Length: 109
Image (tube, rainbow, N blue to C red):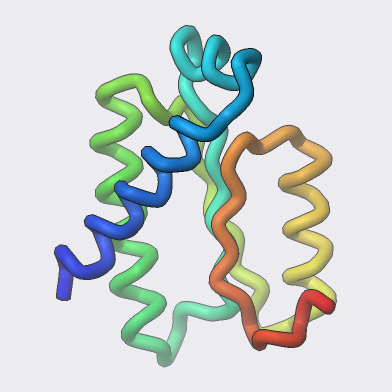
């Protein structure tokens, strides 16, 4: 189970780093990417708890290698309005990579 989540997360982050603009690539070389992860809720959801634990572990490894400079996690507690506000906040704060594990498939429409 652990590898089934961590490996796709690593592949996802690496694929984004390869598809970034020249300016973003230069920034990544000098300071690493600024990454945000959004979750609907952790309590009572074993999948999301494991996801968050594995993301944190993976990010620590990527920070050690210099690929990620900053990581923040946001939890909306099943509130679509909070989730939307948090996503807007990460966009406004200039995060390079924003990963969203949404409350519902239609919550961000």
